[in-house]
Picture 1 (cartoon, rainbow, N blue to C red):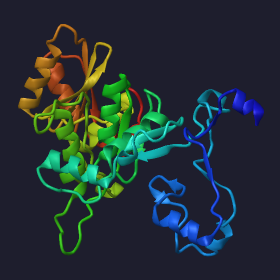
Picture 2 (cartoon, rainbow, N blue to C red):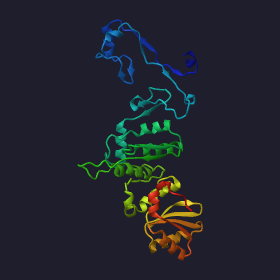
Picture 3 (tube, rainbow, N blue to C red):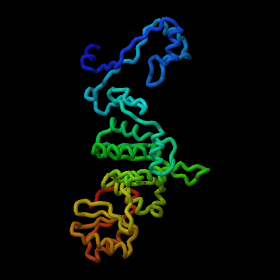
Picture 4 (cartoon, rainbow, N blue to C red):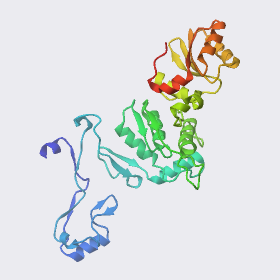
Length: 333
């Protein structure tokens, strides 16, 4: 213990006080005057405590020492840290390592109301709480996963934290429609969670937008036998984005959807193999920085023949294969 004190790892209360009440009446008077030890603003000695007489004649200390643990002393940097969440009305009363000030769900409701103009979601988590927890628990390049995203407070907090410390954290938010028999069209995932991210990035109510990219994906369950009929370019685009580049991307408009680049090769996804598509691909192929095309379409052989007739070098792949193989498919040839 002496060594901990020497290393300043024992934090003693700023005001050290010990009180002894000689009689029960004296103790009750102190309780009524709220002149007893507290946890935050909650008295630890109350009239309704059982065996209150136990504390009569005994020395009672106000405040208690805290043990400071340094992150450098942990066996690994991902070991959880103890966080002491200080409510806003008690800000300034604690000066211990790992503590931070966070508001209540009222802050969460207020932020949602600012973004949407009304209370679009009940019981939203306070933004300050999630941001501070992420500041303690993540590194600048981490991926944050929230299985129950609700109103997207976690995604909002990640963007704010990145803006604060220059980090490159990314996030995955999972949610459901939460439709009910009474409200069959209720879709919190798209109407609240995804929409909040769009507005935070674009800015809302006079606030500047926060830098970031965001893609909204809906999980569809397709029977393998139905894949040739139900799979479309939108499904293939996201699977290919994950496969080729390890990211989810917003689906661009138009018959030809640019997926990205692999050196001087442009990767594209097409809805059809008609004349409009061929013309759009010809425009891409004419760019000076593009040497060849890798194109996914529902009719790869037909498209390859039409492009070859124009002298355009392209490798054409089946849209169905992209959907069926998903992120495990092979690389661009």
